[in-house]
Image (tube, rainbow, N blue to C red):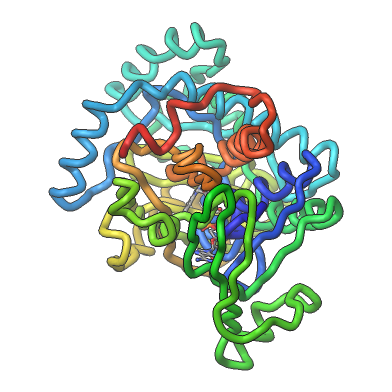
Length: 414
Ligand SMILES: Cc1cc2nc3c(=O)[nH]c(=O)nc-3n(C[C@H](O)[C@H](O)[C@H](O)COP(=O)(O)OP(=O)(O)OC[C@H]3O[C@@H](n4cnc5c(N)ncnc54)[C@H](O)[C@@H]3O)c2cc1C
């Protein structure tokens, strides 16, 4: 089996396939795992809750039209997504426990409600979540401040939702450690190797890949992990596989051919700021304890180890377009909720993009015989990745999948 891409989706898929006894080869054009979306993640491990969506990100008219049409025509996949999210969180917890993964995890994820309108909307959804068996708690402002004592007294807050099973962590560390476990089970990782094309020939798929080392010595030493990259032949190489799983986000469509598949993806842009926490013995409550979401400002604030990460400023563009990040809003949002909690040295600012489908749901399933997709767009990519990888690996290996996720297969959009 070949897996294309070594972000969280690729690493979890490789691990699950190897755990089922498959022979697995992962192709990654970067020098290590988790260098793109996974690196940029807001670091929230969150359940997917039907109805809990923020304001739709600004997007070009053509995309808004596709979004409207997909949501109007699409099958209701929320039951499958809900079950997949539940399985994904349980699988992530099981992997952490059974394999001893340490990714600076914390437990607790609150969604701040800043006005009466948002509180009423949350109250209206509580019953629905409880019917689904989701123990979402509605906290008063005082209870929210007890769970997150670093929250500012000055910030208007009428309540908060506590999401069951939610928390924070470092998805890059999670992916790096899981990769070693996959290697222990026999999975191979080829870094600096770009997959150029996939051709179907009867039951076999031929993968055309090429060794693409970084051009400058500085990049080479910063990105490459010693011992990972075996000597490689120059120029494109062809290799046959029984199955190929595409876990390469926005770049997947270039390999399956958007015209033939009928699929379209856009880029969801987000800016992030990572800052060291101010550690004062006299004020242990400074900063977030775990995860805090502010839908009114479109912000996610997460504690990872002794740092705080803030993500936000969403916008959708075509898959190639760029966008100017707005870091100032993120700094202001952090100061609003957790004043004085961070040091303004060693600030890391970044901008990243993730793939998004018109209906905002993941693409998990077979696109044609032997060719599988595991693209988990959206804000719950980590929470879904472990479940999607497990179900997909069972399907690819010809076993009985733990869940029926046919509603998330690419055919719904073709
Ligand atoms: C800004 C941001 C914030 C996010 N916040 C959260 C969050 O808080 N919680 C959450 O659950 N999810 C979040 N997500 C989503 C989550 O990070 C992803 O869904 C998850 O990490 C899975 O990523 P991935 O493996 O699909 O993609 P990536 O991590 O991008 O991996 C794809 C890999 O494919 C490789 N690749 C591409 N093309 C080729 C090719 N042709 N040949 C070889 N290799 C190739 C790339 O180099 C890359 O390493 C966020 C994403 C972003 C961008």
